Image 1 (tube, rainbow, N blue to C red):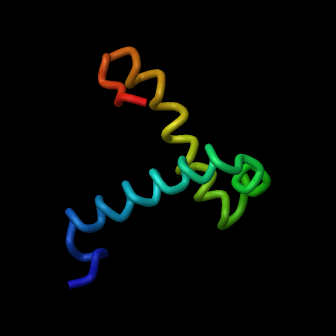
Image 2: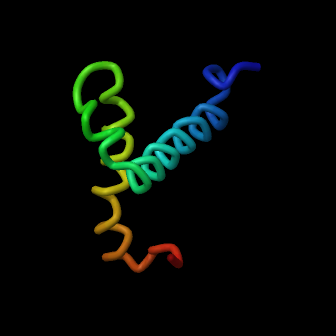
Image 3: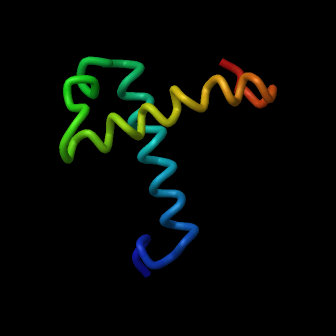
Length: 66
């Protein structure tokens, strides 16, 4: 069964996409920052989700060990 039709698999794929984009932005920020609009802007937006939620995670005390 495809990941699109299985809800748990779809969530896993989305989470992996978000984590991968955040990792790429941490290693090479210019790679994602130059594509803020258009089709490749999706990857920039996925990386921004992690940046925006970082303060929320630290406020609740659920921050992972770094």
